[in-house]
Amino acid sequence: MNSIDGYLREVVKGTYLRKRERETWVKEMQSHLEDSVQNYQVIGLPNEQAYQKAITSFGTPRELRQQIVRETFMISPRWFIMATILCIFSLGVALFTNMRFDDVVVSTGNPDGWKMIPNHVVVTWLHHYFPLNPARWATLGIMCFMMIFTRKQTDRLAVLVSWIPCCVSLLPSSISLPFIKESQRVIFSAFLITQPVNIASIYEFVMLIMFGTLLYLWAHNLVVSLTPWLISMTLTTYVFVWRTVQSTLWQWTHNPIFWGQAPVDWRDAWFTLLSLLIHFIEVVSFFYICQRIDAKFIRRVKVVV
Image 1 (cartoon, rainbow, N blue to C red):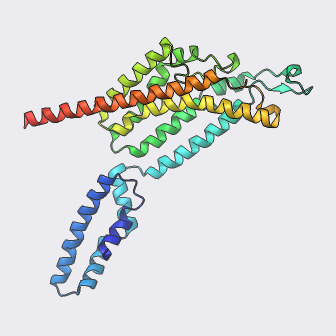
Image 2: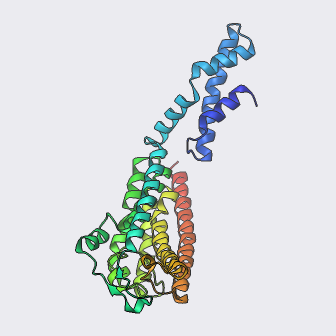
Image 3: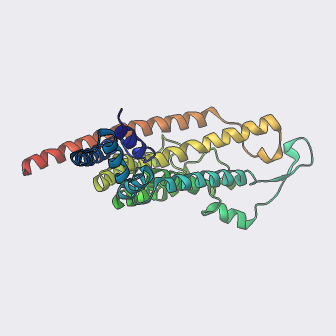
């Protein structure tokens, strides 16, 4: 590996580029560097000095890296990563405060004798809307993470509108929550598809594949078009996972803060697993649809040419 290869490797390091994009940038910069080396050799510089002079005049790796990120993303992916981490932290805070729902006055060792503390209307409002709603923070975190894979304004708009299926499916989703207590339905009102064998869930699955196809036709970015599925699978899975964690912590510690969730039923695990399986089948079908769309587009281009 000569000095140019090491220099270019350092330039593209940490740019969050895809493999093909990285290869394109390396070929372009390598071509300019080799031309510059030849020009310095023509004026009589030795090979080593010509290479060093060309690299020095080309710019530092940090400057070129910033230029590549600016031309490719416009906004550095590091900002999206930081926003994702912030959303994950806020999700943890929201889930912790969710455990304070249905707080009790511990008077005896038996939970049957505990007195319930009514939930304050302000806390209920905060959970129903954005500040302390776990589903909202999970959705926003996924959208921030998927921004890393965007390249143009259309991609970013496609990510931003990916939450539409969640909003459209609020009513059927709130109906299909058989294992969540009545007082907590408001908290998890935005969760998707927790019971994948009812009519409401079939409607949501159909809506997901139709919406994902529309996003692909609009943005032509396969990864970005998967955002609705990622949101749906995350919101479908983590309600079960969190209930399992909370009930397990209660069984292990008997700390009143973890009280409030019934032991996990095998039907909950079955519904979650079945939902993920249907999601996977839908994603495979979506890939096939995208291949057919691309093949039809290529044939149309050949006919026009």
